[in-house]
Image 1: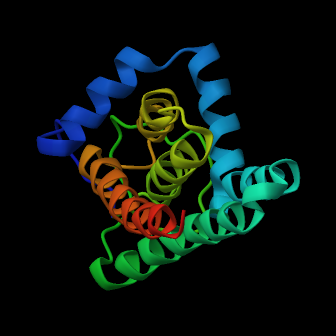
Image 2: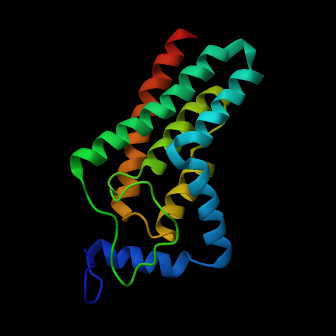
Length: 172
């Protein structure tokens, strides 16, 4: 349902963020991140690469990769319960296709944060600041999520990733 009139609330915040962040370069980068993160496939593939390269911790990498997919699945389950529609206002330009019309939480934010938390534990480097903000911003640039969608997705991904990371630490 297309909202009419001046944007208010989260629509206004999203429109402003998109206006500030959107450029040819950021849209191209955001679309790349969107395709990489679709259904958590890129993050899962990176976990498989980690398992192939780090033979000593292969099982941990595989658990982490499956955990990323599990975080994605959790976000889909929440989406189906909440059923919040994606942004639909003339002030917001949608710049990429989506697999569903449901918005809350952002599955890209969820799987990216889970991957960042889990793979940080396996690489010994804090990947969260490098991976999470660009993915969250990309969802706003593309006009496919409200700000609370990406924040909730990051929180869910952090929770799932943190729980699995804790279990992996106990095994070491």
